[in-house]
Amino acid sequence: MTQRTGRPRAVRMSVELPLWRALTGFRILTLGYALGLFLLNYREYAHPLGAAFYMGLLTVWMLATWNRVTAPERCTRPFLVAELALALGGILVTAFVDTPARIDGGAATLPSIWTGGAVLGLAIKGGWRWAAIGSTLVAVANLAERGHPARDTVHNVVLVCISSIAIGYIVEVARASERTLARALRIEAATRERERLARDIHDSVLQVLAMVQRRGAAIGGEAAELGRMAGEQEIALRTLVAGGLVGPRRSAEQLAADAELVRTAAPEPAPPAGPCDLRALLAPHAGAAVSFAAPGTPVLLEAAAAAELAAAVGAALDNVGRHAGEGARAWILLEDEPGEVIVTVRDDGPGIPEGRLADAEREGRMGVALSIRGRLRDLGGTADVVSVPGQGTEVELRVPRRFPGGEGAGDE
Image (cartoon, rainbow, N blue to C red; front, side):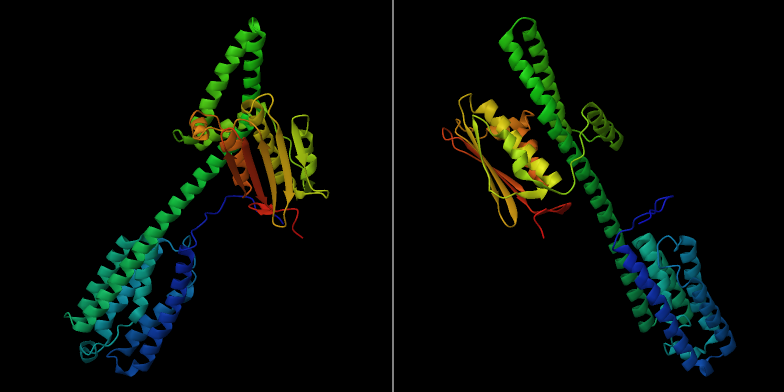
């Protein structure tokens, strides 16, 4: 598929485009209605040639501009003003080409209901204020043509005013909703990118700094000073990561600069394409303190999803090593269900005190919030943490074979 280059086209909301297309059909149908009325009553006009001249002018205008209202880019404000002027002129001309008896009897004006198309165009383009101005001018022209405020004239005028203003107001509300949705989508995209970067930082930089702090304190001497500095940098970086997720709003340029800085410091290799056996990614975690159980057949999952799931398992095991104690054991259970893949990580440590996860998130320790739950959320899955004090912790990770962004390898 070839890509077009050049200036990007503006993307319009889905509500507005159908309104413009409906207005195009309205103009064509109402022109046919006005021509039919004119032909049926041609001999009853006081000056039929004058009426025919205006209807011919109206027909030529429509032939030349029928597609001007199919898209908002082509329907400019000068065009709408010209169309409204043509409609007002037809209403006023009716007083000179028609007989007083027909006018008093409530006969339709030359443009008839085609005038409503001009007012509706103003409503869609400029909102309810433009609609109010256009409908007011139409009302004045109709009263001037009739000479007195007859009941049917007032009824038609009020109907045009209310309908056009209501449509204009609805369009303004739809546009405001579109802008709000666009801002929300931009914020969500920026937040997801920051969460991804925060996960990468947690899985690499923060863990290295924590290890340097512990080893430095154990060795002592100059290494202790190095460990102290590493601990200070870990706290500062955790504060930055947490503050970036809930702190003041940053510009798109700042977010792009942050992302480029992290990518430059620690570039990520692109994940392989196609299905991947999840067992091969989880088996290296097995060891003297970690037991791994898996089905005898390959557990296939799309490569990017498998890598993220394996990283979440690694984060869970890292938490076991740091918080469950040196003698704690862990078990990894991989289950291959028809619609999803389930990985359970369980340990026999002291468990997590109630409220500790919430406290850790407030302190900037995002291991569970980002490295585990954040990854599973991006895959369309779930991460449930169950912990009983004194009985260990169990983390259950579920990833559907179909998830946002693609299909799982298990789908046939």
